[in-house]
Figure (spheres, rainbow over the protein chains, first blue to last red):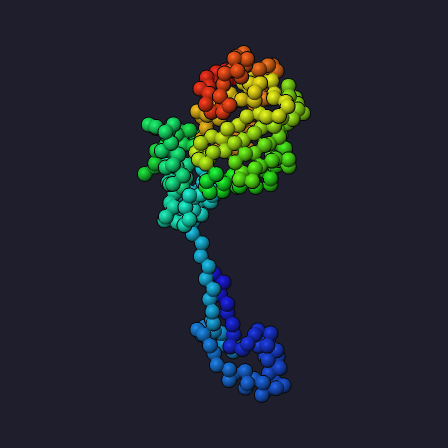
Length: 134
Length: 152
């Protein structure tokens, strides 16, 4: 999160300037106080008034099961879609095997479906019998 | 070449270029414009029968890569004489057919082949070389391999 906090005046350097000049130029102080405070005012223990004008919020999500960063089959990050999908997330979920190796569901399902893997498939990474963990 | 296969191959190529693994000549790797065919130089490891010798491996990828194994053969003027490598460049290596998994890669295949060369005790083609080379399919994946002698 990266809050952009602005004081009531147009910028900080100006505010400081005003404070040091306060005693010498009372007019300037008056001008400063007249400016309306835009945004959400914050509590302040100083004479400065602070208002939040704008918040720029960034988020990140991660699969909890993933562990390692990329799918061993398509080599894409778990958080991006597999090579066959356009959209990451719920449309392209992960599955974890009993061997604790994780893959994009679409990648491992395609591997399991290969004729050479019938009737039982192995984990591409450790060759243990592939079974989805509960 | 499918989009999915091309995307993975592109990732592999970039990774090879940044990692530049020992024993592989990545700088003069030739890839066809659609990435379907690669030629990679490999160098025999020091202290082995093939020390310093340079060979060329040719990879051909199908649209189902990495769910299907690539076809990998030695090409060029020098085919290493090795008990599991036929004089036409075909390689008898289980990960190239029955034991392939999509977690393997160009890099891991190259390193497996280099390690296979390193453990060789004799520069000799397989006993059935003459017959095999005369009768085999051009594509080694059509061969029903019999894997034996895991020590070499």
